[in-house]
Structure formats: structure tokens, C-alpha cells
Image (cartoon, rainbow, N blue to C red):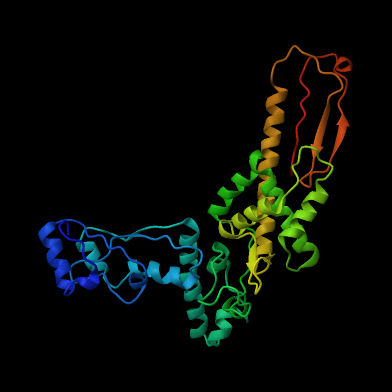
Length: 340
């Protein structure tokens, strides 16, 4: 294929691909999208896929990603092994990978319940008994369910809302993301997430970016070290919550520019666990800094410095430290902010 690049559709039949491979002894790369996703097979009697690189935008619904990933799996493992490969290697995002794996577990669980006599729709919804958490593919992705117009509220998401058992366990990906949120430079991101959590907890209703901005600036108005939140920065944080971490969901809206958000579909429990984990990480880091500062040698005495404890809502209280002279010892009194 060095002299000419052909699509599979341009080939006379599958044997052309076999002939090219046997003559050139080079790997064949297949590039495509819509036809590659369904309709055209890029397997032959001697060649099967060994590697798959997949990156689909968030405009593509869950089933599109599952189906496209499935093009790398097939009833041809014997041929795959004969060609020197034990498995197909897939390159894709962590979220899509976790979602595809859990989706297959969801299908297997539904199939098992149907075989035991549960009606199909009830089995899919987990109506009689909530489906196991390991089959909760929705927790790994912000993608929509099924193909439909973007701004239509009556969608598959509202019709297909399976019940999954709640869990306090975070995925490996979210555990890593918690470390990012716990970093001092990302404190605003963490505060915005807590505001979203509080708004949903109080009202159990959808909220808008304007609600978050108002609540944020009201909570932190007395903090001179906190920059007032703008709607632009707020929407940027929300995009990460939705697309990267599935900690907030965006509700379909008929009007452009009136985006509404929520923590429904089991997201609330996961967000609670995530926030708790970030607090633990921040608290551990703060204690480490305190211990590190306490062991630092110093010949300089500090008088009247206070230790400030700041809670995760940003409202803290100052406790006067003991006068260094009264202590009759040399040491360092450090001002440390702890966001639990």
C-alpha cells in the first residue's frame, strides 16, 4: 500500500487486502469513521484488527462509542492468535474505556435477569431490584443515551434511567482527579463544586450558572484573598465537572443560553464521596505542612502570631497563639489554612 492508498470500499474484494499484505509484509492502517463504525467490515480471511485508536467527541452518544469499540472484537480469535497477537490493543480515554466495560456488564446483568423471568423493560430499568454498581456505565461518562436532537427535553435519558445501587467507592480515575482538586492552585474549582453540591442538597432542583455565582460570591464576600467568581469562569469549571469527572449533569433545554444543571441519577452520592476524598487529601497536606514547619530550626522569635483554621466553606476563626516569650522557648508559629 506504499504506492497507492485505497479505501476498503475501493478494493475489488477482501482477497485484494490479503494479497497486498502477503506481498508487502507491511501492516495495513484503516482510517475512517461513519462507514468504519458500521456497515463495512475491515476483516478478511487472513487479516483481523490488532490495534484500535478511538477518540470520539462528546456529541456522540453512548451506543455509538460502544458499537465502534466493538469493531475491534470479533469471532476470529484463532486467526488473531495465528497472526501473533493474544488480544486487540485499544487506545482511548479512561472514561470511555470504563464506560464500555461497565456497559457490557450492564447487558450481561439484564440478560441474566431476563432469563430468570423478569420482563425486559423492568430488567433494563432495575425496577424490581437496583442493578449492581459495577454495571453502572452512566457514572463514567457525560455522554447522552441514544441519538436525538440536542435540545429536546423528551429524550432517551428521561425514558431510560436505570436504578443502580449506590456505592461509596470512587473509580481509579476519580481518585486521581481528587488529587488535582486538592491542589492549592485549584481551590476555586473545589469551592465551585461544593456550591453545586449545596444547591442541590438544599433544593433538590436544577440550578443555573447564575445561582452558583451568586452563592459563591455571597459565601466568600468577606474573604479578601478570594477573587469574585464570574459566569465565564463558572461555566469553565462546570464543563470539567460534566465532561471530565461526571460530577454534575447538564439538563436538556429548549432555549439556548439557559443551561441548567443537576446532581441527579446517582451523581449526588458520587459527588459527596468525591468531595469527602478531596477534603481528606487537603487535610493530610495541611497537617504535613504544619509538622514540617514545626520541625524547622529558627532563632527568630515570633510574637502574637495567630494560627488560623479555615473550614471548607472559607469561614474560619482565629485563635491567638501563645506569646513566644511566655513559652520561654524558640520556635516557629506558622499560619496555616486548612480546607477540610
